Length: 300
Ligand code: AMP
Image (cartoon, rainbow, N blue to C red; front, side, top):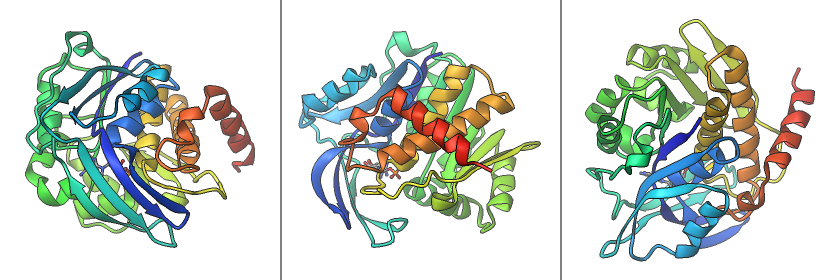
């Protein structure tokens, strides 16, 4: 079943212990919609400026990502983010974020062909934008959102409103703590469930990820790769693959959720093996399935 993703399409300047890239392809919507495209029909809503490189759209289209919802505003500038990773690549600092064309009050234009999409993923972006999107489409079968410190700190009220309108939330452990004040991820998850979502997925870096609902908890460890080059977009790729796999299964059974967690972990591990989408763009579903099968074998 088709999946609609909304999120940033951005230029990223990246510095990791393995190198440097200037104005490379990035953005939460880009990583997530690309990751989802391995599993299901993937549609992207976002906005870019007149400086957007057409070859970046070409790269997304080459995997079949539907870009009818990617608006170009010729007289504005594309969203820009720059970040630096420390020797411990679990740690990074944002050097600069310029929303530019994707302001905190950006209202998306939704093509008619997207309005009945059954699965919706709200990638990192303003909660005001997310609510506007939900208000302009038919009620989806499943709506899941991601968020980050920028919006938890800056738009808490709007974010709390969004949480009452979604089925699931995907965050990392730091974001879960920031949102709830709880350090223990189980306590944090419990508090998030009280804010509206029926389930929460907490990503815990090298410790893996957990899916928690009122009556379920599933845990998956991180895939052990020795080739981490650039962690940017790992969270977005995880979320996109998780949603894409759920959309492919078409239900929220225990089996489907576990499969989605496994695929999300594997896809995130492939994404971090190159800067930007340099490696990710050449990944195939066969490669994902091969790594997923190897991963299943080593799980206890
Ligand atoms: P991740 O590494 O999964 O946290 O995602 C990093 C991606 O999110 C980068 O490609 C950035 O362009 C994008 N990003 C960074 N800050 C923001 C923000 N405030 N809103 C939307 N996207 C962002």
